[in-house]
Length: 175
Image (cartoon, rainbow, N blue to C red; front, side, top):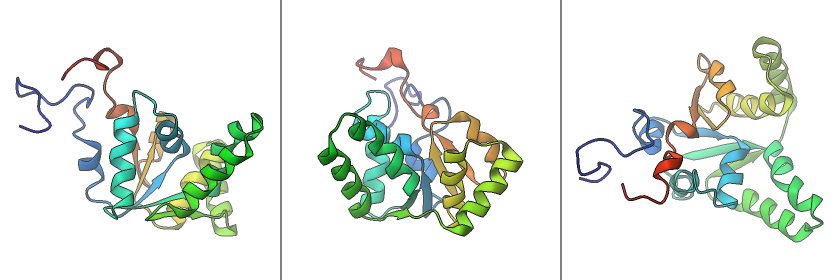
């Protein structure tokens, strides 16, 4: 049976949460935090299968995703620091042209919402801008790997990648 190990148990690493796709099934617009893109571009062994599933779903139109231009800043810092402008520009083009992904500017409405989130939940500025972007555009879920953002669950469903990642011990071992 797909998605089950031979003993009938769910695949390791799902921590009783089901699958990422299953968790996102009821959402049409989802906010994406920068680590989703970093993990994918760096082919992070713990998260690559999750980011592939997520971004393939976005690319196929299963979900529409939104991320703030803060992601552009955070994603391109490293290439700029390494004096690799072509990579920085390639990352920007990926964000701009990715099907069913909205790269949203930080508007006055987003800034206002971010200030309210910072005041109420004591978020860091970049986190507040990312979540505010999702909220202003009426996203119903926000995918991140920052467990501190779980406190926002009363206003948006916060989905933590670690809750779906295979355990480090199971990487490389058959499931």
